[in-house]
View: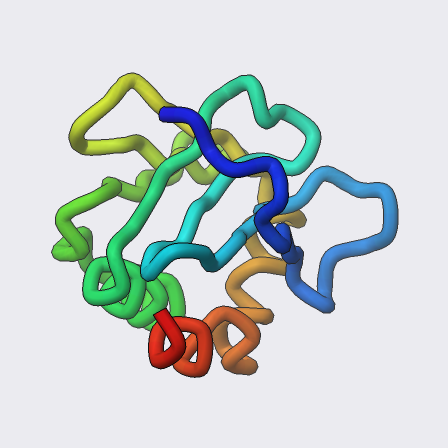
Length: 117
């Protein structure tokens, strides 16, 4: 999938500067997810409802009912696997923990962005 390069990619405020990060961008009624240092690994796109379910799952560390990705732990990595394409994003514990902390603080709720779409 080709993603608009002009999207406003964001990382959690808990991510260290210059470190690998979970990167998220809202745009066109969707939310896009990728690895900041490995964008060639692919981008996974969620519609607003699936993103809301995904954020709840990340916050609660439970479930894979978002319909877009499955999240699994493999050793020290958290794997985010697309259910409809070849994309597989791998995040280390620090990267995923920073993202989860941002999710818990509401940094990725994107209510205003969806309302204006």
